[in-house]
Length: 608
Ligand SMILES: [Zn+2]
Image 1 (cartoon, protein in one colour):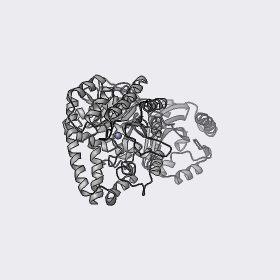
Image 2: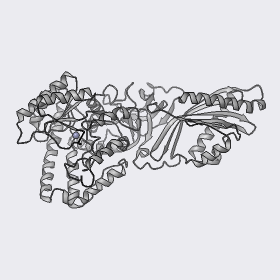
Image 3: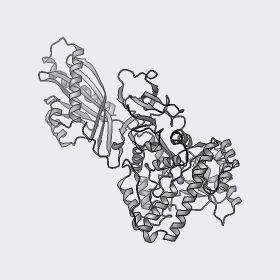
Image 4: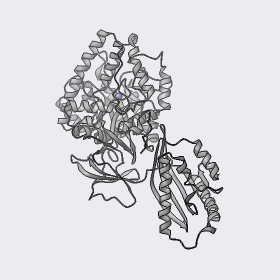
């Protein structure tokens, strides 16, 4: 439809332009000099937008009744109207005009297009804009202009990043003075300048002095949780202030603020490993949106513990009450097109271990017969070993009670199990309880200002929850137990790593004070503190997590054909995992944005 409108308006305008101008133009023309002149007029026009110079901007346009301006809403005629409308509209906070293309149409007439990306506050538009340039006695002027937003999923124009130090994620080596050529949202070539020539017409961006690595992937998140107690009233019950059904409705209505927080933190893909059925719908919504991380989702989780935290007509927990219930649950997930079957394997002292093991095995065999990877939350060694024996493909938490033993390691190796240590989520709970008990504000670690105001407000409310929080004695016990579990988790990570088992990076974001997006930094730093090298941390957070998502074919490295999802850092991430905080640009599906552009409050870009 847009095409039809565009074509129709183009013909109208061209006809108008021709009748208006042809009489005054000499017969013989040099097309090449027309192109140079039109290009200069094009540059003046875009510069005026960049500099927000309305006089210079309007001076680019044909001062005539025939000036045509076209967009999805139709055509608008006349210079006066154009001037009026442009003075009524605000300048964008950010303007990018790229991929300028021109073609001579006839003597003194040149047609041109460029791809725009404009940002107003947190609202971004990108698309294609056209111009028809005419030679007039007053110089080259724009006789027709249009702008049409591109449908989501339209890849940005090809771009080449040059001069940076590249770690493509496929091995240990880095390439200095590298070229990363992106086209159609994918990597066309990444390597040395000699190996990756930049074709004519592809715009380059000099990133010398910076490091280029694949985008981070958080392999353990929950979009159905907020990052505070309102999403987990089983931790601190705040339902009198924030009814759970309202919290869920809000989460469902606005995944964008979390999408943005992820991208802003350098996270270009996430794996939601348990939530309400709507979390499955995020996958398609996010895949074609370069303002969102790519999403895989496991949907409602199967649990040995009949947890009450559900909505009256929707469940996020499917109770494994029998072997039949386990098989039914897996069949439901498979029919819904899930990416995995997630199992909470939690055994309370009063439970019969063997009985619960049996239902988990039933779920595992049903998942295996449907080729669904099984993801297990099992933090006790006994449960984790049982899950591995049943064929678990991924463990989303560390074993935190005992040291993992040879049988655990052998089974994990045999299965090709991916181990996602999730080291910092317990401390998030503890920090919320401490803030509540002491009245001191809970610290927020968000180096790029990625977290939205509502979440920050709720986190700050922790300090006013004294009555609802564990009392000081209980808190001391929780703190002691957290410390103990953190020590075991760190040691187990190194045992698992030494045994050659693949590691992923995941935060369990959405749990109290494990905030969607920036919590990856603390998690990666905890992995480093446990003993992984910065490179091993980075590998876990890229190719390891891509494998966990089942997306190692197109994510996790920057080799030819992979998605162009990457981050550009101003400090060396191979020297210290903390340097992963130094994100300067985030590239998602080939679209390059500055990290500060993605901040929750979207500060206006300074003039350039
Ligand atoms: Zn989780």
